[in-house]
Length: 437
View 1 (cartoon, helix red, strand yellow):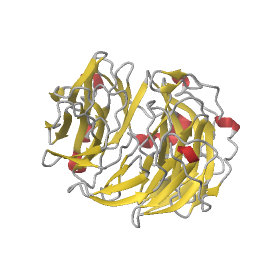
View 2 (spheres, helix red, strand yellow):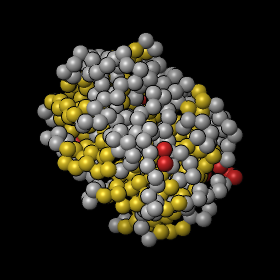
View 3 (cartoon, one colour):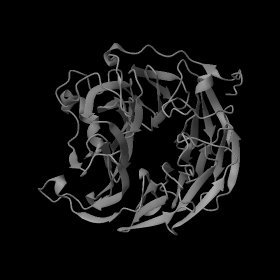
View 4 (cartoon, one colour):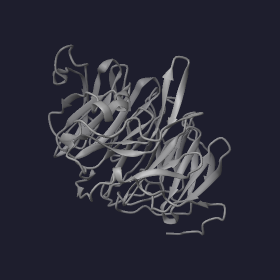
């Protein structure tokens, strides 16, 4: 890997001491999901002596967005404006971060649970204005029990959890997490797919639910189910439509006008206006398993892989699927990228972080690369997908990019196309997410 010296403008901050109340015992990796929780998941809904709201929380003049990143010993939280650390939690093992959908909490996939992490910032609406608060981040003694905790999807006012080990789908209103400490987790609607598989589910307007189809031998497509009958069980949902022409179905994204997509090994499925349509790849094997959508654009940004036998393919083309026209465009970037390289800008721009260290801004309709912004040193993707690698996360008009080899994080102003701030970390960053507060 090519490295470069840390610029003198990069400011160094020492990590804050982690509060004892969030320390948990060492965890073992389980399957592809990560580590087991410190507390028994079944006890997470019980009473707790934790204070709520967090001790030391103060009213702020404005929203206080924060970044949340994982490392091999836990979770670190940064102020998104200053990049200074403001807290964190100890949590050993490989853990995955998922915004919970309320602008405050994240769900940490730890293998046999989705643990609730409070990033410590939130806004309380009061009619025509809101009150903003900032406090200490903490890992709560609250968890949704899981078997191989998988994808977390936020859409249509619902947060949906998928258990790869059982096919259990749990759906809930993320607003209920605000009272998780005092009253327990929000009530969930539970639906279980006919067979367990590495899948995903998406909540749709009107209470409908999109679920993947598959079993331990493979995955084949999606089905859309109607809302649970009033007074009945969520398991009594009736199927509206299905499509099984999607081998290896993986991932999901939402585009403008409620178009929901999933990737296939030979194209992409689009669910829109009650119908499922297929956009085929130009190659017999043309996998689009990772996608990034934007409500500002009808176009879905996806990866594009053509070598089914590769241990790790390092593609140099990305896919742009127009959900209105049902057309696919492939764009050659001249550099490879990873599954953590895809993002969308505030106006729906397609963003791709290349292994040459540059962030490309792409017009999703034309496929033209409108700007190329140097951010990090050139890097090579590891064959182990859990390993740290430069990661892109977009919050508002700022693109944040980690540089694990240098233990740094960079903030890119998407309006000016310039790196405006960089900071050195005391940990090697892995996953990166955030909340708006």
